Image: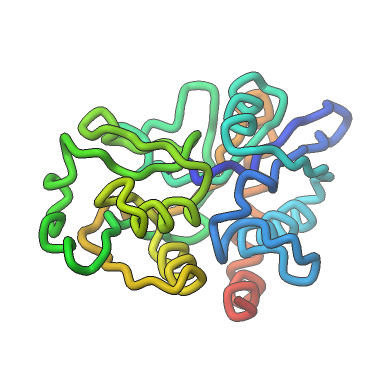
Length: 231
């Protein structure tokens, strides 16, 4: 899944100003945008720390997932945050470069408990209708029928309403929205597990060493850990 996108646009000056989208991440709890300035979401907090450490000015926008994806493709925004594992052959695209890893996430084929056994291997979802988020990338979506919804929250509700038997959702987001919607779910089988990286448009590749160095510093000085501890 493209995880919606923390997407970004740049005005070239001596140091580029990167503009990134937060709106498209809002359902990806606890990673995405919460609307709370004190606790905006793990990725939002990390991006703020990274860009401050790298001395790269940023601006934010607030877009739906599909518009954010299109804006990134058109170069109107400059980076998003993804896992290469979400893409076929782990190829993030020829127009982009990726940072060193930020952290690891795990996605599952998620079901209601009474049908989990029908999907206890990933291949058992192939050929079936699978709940997905519009605008997200899935490396194997040529092997199942996408049922695109607006968010992870809507996917959990879709399971409850019987719109599909299985959906692909990140582990923590699935558990969060199941609790919010007061329903039981099962993490039936693994879809992907891998690192999250900043995917930067290649025209800003000159900024990548500063971004990577900032990530390294923040990991080593405990700032990354503090963000995760806060959530």
